Length: 333
Image 1 (cartoon, rainbow, N blue to C red):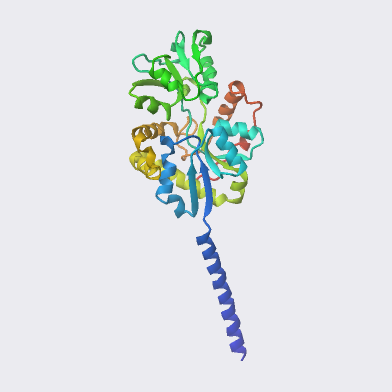
Image 2: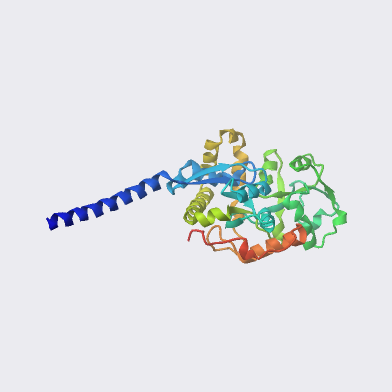
């Protein structure tokens, strides 16, 4: 009788263990972590790896249910992530810094694009350096980050600003002014406007602000702090898949653009522009301080330089301790 009771107790213990294991397995299978991911703007080529990771089920294999939505500017995207409407986003770091300075619970977890600010001119009348802007006309919308940092570019080469004619068109109208040759140059982003102007039949020349010592980080992955605290493993998996997608897109940009268009068929008409934007992006994935480091790594010196430029030229009220702005702790090894 004692043997029977002992055996019964053992079976009961085994049964409880199997039940708990089954419950845990079912819970894991039924509860992928949902991530609403907000882009900075309407779709352009650099976004393709995110769509590829969704289209090919790469996020889903890691237990993540990711939805990618377009943005209406990094400032708005930063607010949506801070409010928890979106958990993560592809946000310009300058907008994130401004948000954190105002109390938004945001943190950068991966750098993607740096030093993309440039000056575009017609190849038939190229402007090759800041000093060559003297006596010429340039166009930019005052709210653009490239416009806010233009004084830094001019100052870096001791250019006489009074000798440059500046036009301030409505946001998005500067490309037309260059194409119509109403201005000699425009401020721009290498991975956005270069391809847009070329798509209109123009041959362009451009130089980057960083060619003349104005170095600034641009877009990366920004997350809601509470979400990161509550879902550290999900953040790590998201960043691992994202890294792999960007590396794959660099090796095979056509595959990435095909995946984007599969999810957004209306972008077929922009295929060539998207491809060109994506092909121009890899040159922006490293800074002088991150060469040889894993994709997405962030260096304290880059954050300090970016923030210093914002304080001096971008109207940032105060500098923040850079350690409060970013972490590399969730990057894949």
